[in-house]
Amino acid sequence: MADEMMVKELEEVVVRFSGDSGDGMQLAGNIFSNVSATVGNDICTFPDYPADIRAPQGSLTGVSGFQVHVGASKIFTPGDHCHVLVAMNPAALKTQIKFCKPQGLVLTDSDSFGEKDLEKAQFKTGNPFEELGIKQQVLEVPISSMCKESLKDSGLDNKATLRCKNMFALGLVCWLFNRNLSAAEKMLNEKFAKKPEIAAANIKVLNDGYNYGANTHASTSTYKIESKTPKAAGLYTDINGNKATSYGLIAAAEKAGLELYLGSYPITPATDILHELAKHKSMGVKTVQCEDEIAGCASAVGAAFAGDLAVTTTSGPGVCLKSEAMNLAVIAELPLVVINVQRGGPSTGMPTKSEQTDLLQALYGRNGESPMPVIAATSPTNCFDAAYMAAKIALEHMTPVVLLTDAFIANGSAAWKLPDLDEYPAIKPPYVTPEMAETWTPFQRNEKSGARYWAVPGTEGFMHRIGGLEKSNETGVISTEPENHQKMTLLRQAKIEKIADSIPKLEVQGDTDADLLVVGWGGTYGHLYSAVEHMRKNGKKVGLAHFQYINPLPKNTAEVLKKYKKIVVAEQNLGQFAGYLRMKVPGLNISQFNQVKGQPFVTRELVEAFTKLLEE
Image 1 (tube, rainbow, N blue to C red):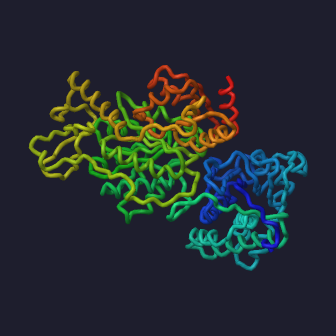
Image 2: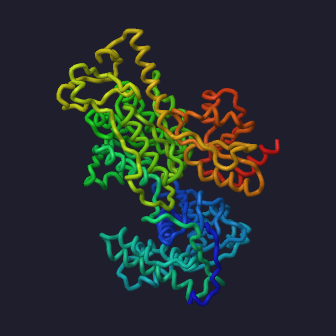
């Protein structure tokens, strides 16, 4: 019957699923994203959930949300506001309605809006829509009772039955946007492969939700989003940043001909990297869940000494604990990738929220002169490339490398074309050669890169010791000589600076002769790019310089930045990168746009702030 209705074509749509943290909103959002990606749409998602393992049911603090932006053309952000808000209970409605456009559609489970439910969400009247002044179209559907009716003969108890109500809402949303359910059914069968009765129940409810929309004409029209951007030939899927990071590490190990070792300790929001890598033992991946953060990093340093591509994963609080072991890798000059999936701080802070507040920690958060390359991923899909390059730099320059991602891009997803590894650069660690055996010393260096040669234990003729005490550059034995320490400190610093010779130059997107240059780094790329493009379409001369390589900076950084009279550095901290640039490139006229809310930037707010700067 959907075919008989008016079908309107849209360029884009934003859907936000919200409910209790146990209502399956993350699963519903992920499936809708995957369904959209498989038909050729571009997507960008934003999972937003509480830190509580299970907050009190129906409470305002326990609301879990998942926002997905679907577009006919390239999408860079999850959207400022949604066109469709799914609110499974009064608490979700109360906390999430602010994200819904005035002309949007609100879909609720009317069975969950009883008197007690309203009290839990601190409503004062029996009409939450009137109390909140909701002007949007509201579609009240008895989702819970429809689920019970759908599964009355399934043999499932009431609790298991109601766990399927997220699929009813998803089915209704899929009907609204003319989505075929086959991809969703496939995902459910895979997720519940060991519980086929649960898979069957979810699939039945999913279809019943779809049919409810079709049979009741729940909306006066349905919508479609036809892909308009030609896509390169290849296989596509949707992928989140943590999974892309995992795949990038596996690809780097494969390219380098090494086994991959991960020493880690669970911490939000980085744990999914450990979970993902643990699935790939057949590809030479070794994962160890250690007793604490220190052991995770220390074991990775040992794996690096033994000849593996060594990785440790964590978030900001874990980096505090790992810093001594990271410094061991600095002074021993061993290849190590340290991945910090940034979250809200300080201390335990806001574990499930996103920030960019660990930049200075990555650059300077260790004792002594301990230079370390720092790379920042810019999007969920870019996490693959960033992880690959972090591993390449670590292995070729014999140094620990910090890879910064954040909760937003780690948990968010986007459409991704599976890469061809033949297109990625080779990874060639500076191994010792048999010819070097007679004259080799532990800190003998490659003249071009400054990296010390890698003598993997067991290589005949290259027995040696390393440790955390300073060593003689000439002999490799412990040394406290002043001149030697000065020399070794400078050699370690010079080695990091030489990495600038092998990283891409800084490029400006948009207007290269801009009146205002927007500068960003890391996971804010999508929002900054969208804001700049919006302003350019409205006649403003604006450019964007977005940094992925933080230390060392691209060689042409000063040359590029000094061309612009007005520069604004936008970041989700109180100005860490702005201060870093002022130190590295003195004399710049830098303004700052800073937010520390635990939420992504809002494109509209960026446009307003940048426009105001242009007019000053």
